[in-house]
Image (tube, rainbow, N blue to C red; front, side, top):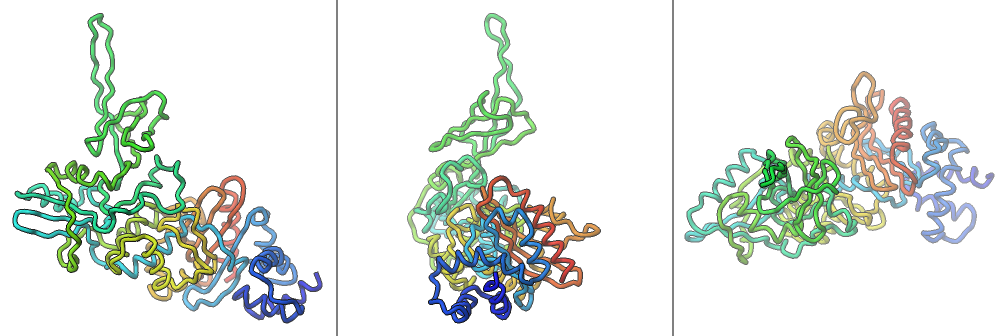
Length: 480
């Protein structure tokens, strides 16, 4: 304990800035050879909270005393949102599974690579009587009846000649992200990616009015029927499916809907092999024949596109409800728009180097949404990313995209401010045994702070950690 307290001055003199620097100075102090990475991390995990007892801020003492944090692998980073001055950290240079905090990486990439005005939906070219189309990974085509969607549908439907479509470099796009769980195929949060999604790659089912049939012996029978979107899929009623659920066979578009579905319910489940259904889906949406073509995307495709929603509108739809499908598709489209890349791995690598500027030591990036269990990032990397975004875009702009505590998005029921005024604006991330929260915090003095709070490897649900973080974040609000 004496040795631990003695090296506290080394720890504090570095301002808790970086564990590698700390251990280099620790080496000089105790005369040990340079510690290998695994040993450094092991010692850090055991010493970090012990050091707090030798004298530290009340925030770190509260983290040390919180039982929930002791039962998990917890990391924490806090910095001034505008200057980047590091204020507090625990395990901030160790790697954590971020879950949907990954969307902060996608968000930053889209801000840098996508145009702020309307996002391209489809590229087109006219050749004689043929209208050729190319998919650009736009996520909202045929998703609703907004004017731009209806305008595009009508152009295609009314074209007097032939209409052809192509998926460009997305033909071999894996339908799932690297590290996704195979048995999530029936859940909307893990729907397939594609170069030209229609209906957001979801099947939807509504119950039609019942038809009563009377047999020869006079016994009435109720015939349950469903209206489907797309119309070419078939949903059969089933007494074995949970109420208000739609189940899909794993490797086909065969669906079973709960027989207890009411006419006011809309059931949904992901489509299977959505990319291979592109001509059928486009035919279903436009009501006309569609062919497939193999012509390459023109070099000047950006001059001939139909536009959809503005970038910021789509990013809010991604960030506030934490929409995984939106994140995957917008990341794909940003790579194509800015760098002419359709390979997911190349998009991630280029964005990590050019936009995020986060080293491979601090980030392993596997997908755009955070569904993948392969994602790894340090709290420091996420916290400093929030700082850089705040310094570049301004905190007022950034809070427009982050869930507000007690008010909106995934933290609507948490982190409420005094008098109903939010003080936490942050992105959540939750997978089994993992929960994270990263974003902005406004203190009582009016100062904006960037933070990242990450918890991995705990048993049970995330509620315990949300309750504990409420206390910690409120303490930070009142202390700074």
